[in-house]
Image (cartoon, rainbow, N blue to C red; front, side, top):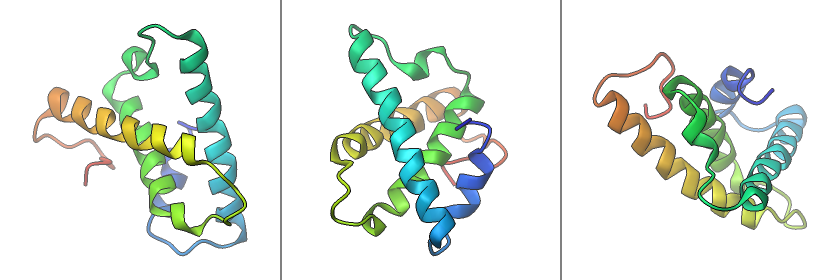
Length: 113
């Protein structure tokens, strides 16, 4: 469901959070944490982005833009530090992958914009 909702994340990145978007932030972080743990449990060289086309990587990058933009708005009692470290690392990988694949060409709603 994360990728299907990438437009929601895109438009929510630059807005002030309300009750609904705060809930979206928490649930999104929980979902991303599941992916993070899956990569760890599978181990080895498995990386989720290796099986995705650039358009899907862009969608994940849009989701990361949303979570990173609103990181400071989480209550202090909610600790997603491991997840945010993973998101930061993934964001670098996603943008590099898009740059390597697309160069200066931009996708519709490109996360690098």
